Image 1: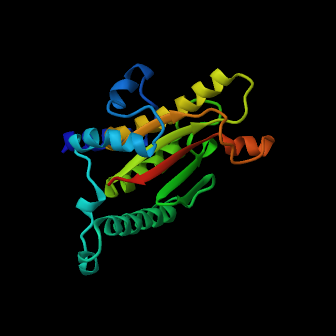
Image 2: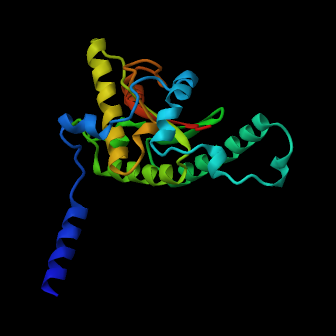
Length: 224
């Protein structure tokens, strides 16, 4: 009985410990299998054998075809399955992530989750916050359910004078999120990780807009 109480106490203490990214020297091990490039159509096609070899699944193998899909050409049926699958994914993410600084959007067939930096990271420290840990854990749980998707993790900063520093900071944010997802069981063969610096701002470069431009975007694309 005493041993049980000790184990339970240790479990509770560990559960209450704030999240901290592992040492940077271990990141390559956590991200082994991830691609450090933009998630273009060509990149997904090239990665597909690696993805399948690492246990990845295609939408056509996880979505049961109904009677109406028994007719018509394969491309049309695949597109219909992908749209339905991604629509369900979008709804679950939207329903679970109703938090300040987080938005879920559709971009064609893809689903994009925008995570403003202050919503997932410590204010003055380059690490994921407890709130960010909770948010990314929720995302990981949903991504495990919808595992027939590729995931692009892109970091962005506001406009900075030093482009090299901007690129490095954006990559740091993207990798930290990638490591967290890897720690929570997301197959790294699904991942594309990029740091885009101050490119593609989504708000003005004033004091408020800068906070919005510092962000990590998760773009989810159907695997087919």
